[in-house]
Every structure is written in structure tokens, then in C-alpha cells.
Image 1 (cartoon, rainbow, N blue to C red):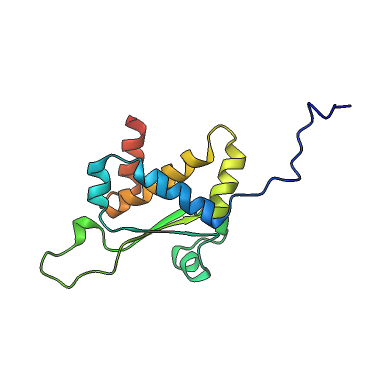
Image 2 (cartoon, rainbow, N blue to C red):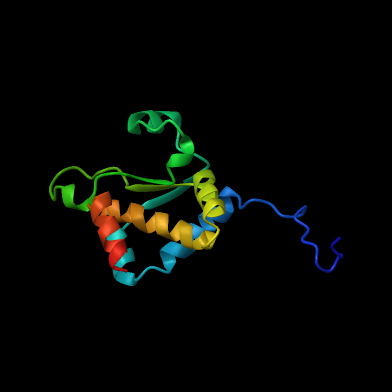
Length: 140
């Protein structure tokens, strides 16, 4: 039997909220090198619990826990200099799938996973494919 001094009490613990995630994402963005942040420009970072049904259907994803983040916008390599201004680029971070990955992994902090997903999605803003991002990450 455990004593009060050695027993973990989780009754007062709560999962990080959407606002907590937003603060962690803002900190992760602020911690990026100046040049990287400068190239990211005015990317809007949004945190939702899950991707919406239309997004999941468009991507052919049945399980909403499979999508931790998404870049939405016209990447820098596809923009035309004289064309109309594109909609603001957005990075979506999905709280519940990220929490699920964090719990399943158990070997990395939540802030690190959020930063990883954020950087991955900003890579798409730069015009990088998943394969290229994976290659860059493997070099690290």
C-alpha cells in the first residue's frame, strides 16, 4: 500500500486546453530562428480539437486521430508575384491527435511534439513535400 508521500494523485490534473496548446505553439514559433520565422511571414496558427469532417473527407482520412496538423494555403514556391494576394496561409494543430501521440509515445514532451508538428506544417508553407521534410528531419 502506498503512503500519502509516495502516491500520485491525478484527481486535480487536467488535459491541456486549446488555449494551453495555443500558448505552446506560440512559444514554439517564437523559439524558431529569426530567418525561419521571417520566411514564415504572416502564417496564422490555429488550434482545434480535430480537423473538421470536410477536411477529413477531402483527405480520405476516416480516423480523426490520424491527422495531427495541416497546412492550408498557397505555398511560397507557388505564388505569383503580380497575382492577387492569396488568402492568409494557415497552420492547423489538432489537440486531441497530438495528445494521443504524446501519450502513446511517452518518450518526448508535449511542447516538443507541438513544435515538431508546427515546423512540419510550416515546411509545407515553404513548398516542401512530406518526403523532403522527412529527409531534412533525418539529417538532424
